[in-house]
Length: 143
Image 1 (spheres, rainbow, N blue to C red):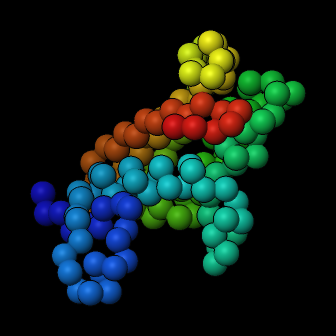
Image 2: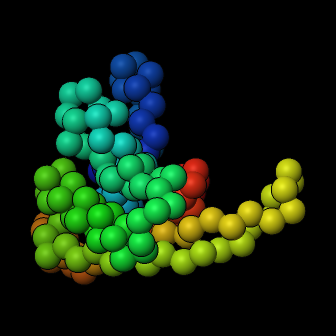
């Protein structure tokens, strides 16, 4: 497969100096873009305040029930992908949340919510099936 998409993170100094920049496949480019949407909070991009995902809004939310949080993240990501990732069609989002115990150097045990996000879609250009999975720990967000 021809690799003609820029790999993240972008290195503007290479582009400005007309040097070669690392490239990636279409699948990797879409995956990187979904990760970027997931890790961007609404309003962070001054040129487009609709760019991002609501995972940041629920980062320290301990009062909402799990189903409400899952629904919020699913709707938010689906809307962002429809608006900002035009290379995908028939997008379906699945969100799972579970409590997980993590060890830490500072504290012996930390309990965090693990959010697993799965995206299933079809790539418009090739009609291939696309699958993406990523997980975050919230309160505070880490990946």
